[in-house]
Amino acid sequence: MDVDPSIIEELRLSALTAIDGLWFLAVEKKLGFQGAVDLDIEVWRQYGLIMLKRATAMMGIELDPDDPPDLETVSELLEALCAIDGTECVWRVETPDSAVFTVRSCSWWENLKKAGRQDDVPCDLVDDATFETWLAAIDPSLKMQSGQSMPKGDECCTWMIWRQAR
Image (tube, rainbow, N blue to C red):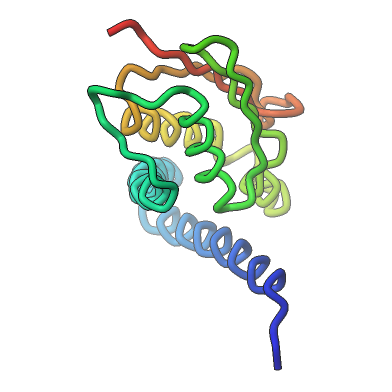
């Protein structure tokens, strides 16, 4: 029997979100809600760094602190990292040193809503911590500020990204 690759991809995505949710619930049961959130943020930071290393290797991008990538390359990296879990995002580079990152469809937010936990789990805090860690690993001069947020009722999530003067 041949399994359609789209079915395998859907199973992978659902497995990723299922294991994350089950992990969070198990930690919450043992350490309480705040303990689970704290550990969740740390896990996502570390996961992001591992996936960033893999993405740069697969995409042929060398991260050099003395020669940081332009924001187009940064956007390609973050789009690749977000696509892993089915998150759909777009970038708009506004200047050579600033860009706006927008998430219009987020599998994590959708799963929290399905589970009825959208008001409990601060996914925007997890995203902020994760994106900050990714950006610092790509180029320590990159800074960010969150703007719109689906958990706060907006239609999308946005982050302004800019490169500080060195």
